[in-house]
Amino acid sequence: MRRTIIFFLTILVLQTGSASYVSAQEPDPLSCGTAGSEKVIEAINSYGTLDRWSAREVKESGIIGGKVAHLFEFYGNQETVKTRKPYEAPEGYLWRTNNVLAVVAGVTKTSNTVYPEKRGEGYCARLETHMESVKVMGMINMDVTCQGAFFIGSLEEPIKDTKAPMTKVLYGVPFDGRLSALVFDYKADVGHEVIRGTGFSPKKEMGYPDYPMVFLMLQKRWEEADGSVHALRVGSAIHRFDEDVPEWVNAFRVEVAYGDITGEPFYQDYMGLKNDPETGFYTLNSEGKQVLVEEEGWASADEEPNYLILTFLASSQPAFYGGVGNILWLDNIRIE
Image (tube, rainbow, N blue to C red; front, side):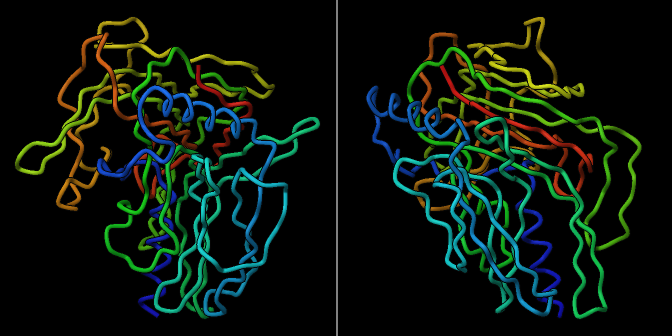
């Protein structure tokens, strides 16, 4: 029983966007160099229409209710496959949701916060912050706040244990190109009150609002002799969705700003360097040890990056906190 509870909480931690894990040693799946960067852009943009999607239909374990759940990803031909097999990205597909399958101590559980939704003749993505509840054997109730995430990268499946859950999420890919802007269609229902839902204690209203975010970051990374990994921020295209937008805004642009942006009129604190172990980005060093990527400062405006991070989040809060009711709809995502 106790393992089941810990397992469920582990899965819900993976819903959050407060931290991430990327391997500095992981090779670029589309090769490196100028041609590789062009392929990365092509791969991101071609699937960014969000019209192609698939679903895994998974029956969860009876001890937690035995419901039939669906895990969505944005490739395929709207097919649904009954399976408990781990997710495998098709060749050339770089996007990933944080919809995830776990099998811990023989218990199968899913979590889904990103959904396809009909838009005109095609589809868009709907990212939610919601409260997920579970009842174990009819005796234990847990409420956990979950945040939707749609990102470039990967997520290990199935989740097999409760060790360092955030290290199982990999945001970003190697990239050495220059970008001008992130462009996408969106609408938003935002500003809902943050609710703390940890599963350990009763959910609590926190009395302040929450807003979705998008991060596009270009970094220049390196490893020191002691195994620590450092970075300079090369480029930033960061936006927080601070207002309700009930009708679609098409071709919304977030320009990539290079170098130190702290003196720019648009700069906000949430655009700053990532050094906090609770909210920063992690990687594997050359010895396979998990370390924080320490953003030491701002690169010069003409520096070449070697890593790209792109993620949309339904909440800007840390794990187990979020504006329950926040929804961010996305379509036609592309980078220029």
